[in-house]
Image (cartoon, rainbow, N blue to C red; front, side, top):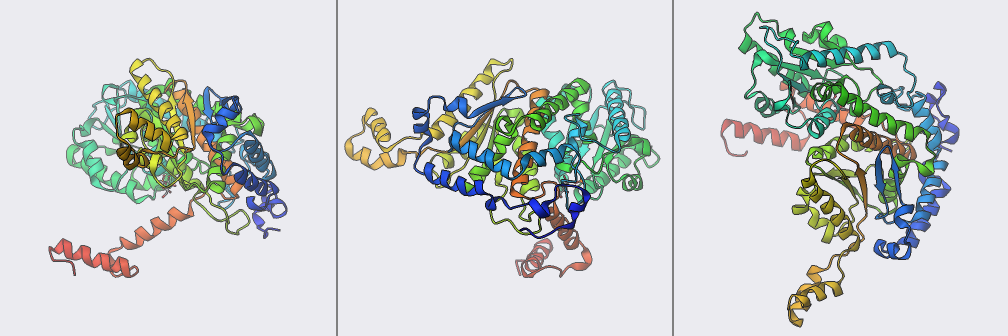
Length: 559
Ligand code: F6P
């Protein structure tokens, strides 16, 4: 039996009695048998043998359709995975999430981001403050869009720059890029700066008019070095341009959970939009962190984003496991990671607007489930979050797809495909995505390669020499997720789909998807190393590199 952990006294599921790591559940052993059974099967042949394969392995919800029929499993495996979810008590986990239990048990709090979009809403104690913030951010966005909000010199604000990083940047940046189009044509332009490298903010401000620029300092903790450095740089830029006596407060808004720290920084109380403790950074685009989205899209767009996510919440919390899209997606990912030993997940949105979807998803998946400590304090003996990476299709086809085709690794892919839309030119994206997925399944055998060369007029010696180089093993697993169109509703549903997929996996692996102690150590180390008095601080490599950097700065050769 797992070791005891006294956080269960809160009334949350009593893991001391019931928690078992997934590999100790009977279904896990059964899944190994499925792995062996399928080891020599090829998905291309499974399609031939089972004409209903697509119907059995695809599922739709909230306007999205996900096709898992190109994955290296069959319906029996999916059923066994669903049984694993049952044995891991996933339904109780989903109940715990939506009823506001402290699923973030290390930090002893609930994860209530669904409350911000009203989907199967979990109870929140501070509902009045949440509503008040929601209505204040809407008023602010309305005033900005109407040109009513003025800077210190009385000129209307025409440009907003979001200063945030991680969850305080990736979500709003990705949604604005996906849906707003070129914001130069909008009543208010929306920009983002995340990096502590001044180049990013310098580029954003290169053609900005300080009198017409507003900065949103977006930081849940209000301690993040990059964001504070950029906020200070923004203040200095404004002061230089507007003069020492200008009311710089008119050019700042803050979104934070650390209200006192923001006030200390000099943000006026009426310009503060509090975000609740119970929204994790990577789940925060639905909160006031989404202010840039509200400004860029207007209320209708922002409400549609929330509505799409809300629909996915309701589906996730109400649908049985066997008909639950995030559950299927989580289970198929777990199958790839733990039974097929696939170490990465490539995410390829076939839409330029979604080019930064993989970056948003990297934080969501890897910061949530890149962990090894289980609910009972022991360490996982199975693999958890894969390395998530990717980029916009079709761009990647001419860069890294080669490795999918002929490399030595199995790399599952999520193709995200926008089916409809008004622009017929976008149909090429759909054709490309479908063709890539099919080619990865089928590959090209040695005989097919030889036939292709023969058809080109090659002689037998040439065929023998080249055919091995033209063979492609195929059998590369992929999921295709179809969106009816790239609009706010579909994007909201897609984002919530991945959020819940992450919860499904984290729950079954037995890790806490809502803390991030690892990155916090990184932040602490960076703070210590940047301390000027600690020049000799660090291990041998750090000290050696610091010496080399100091030499370069002096113009000396490497020591
Ligand atoms: O360092 C990781 C992290 O804490 C993320 O979890 C978070 O999204 C990001 O930094 C930014 O944090 P904050 O919003 O507190 O500035």
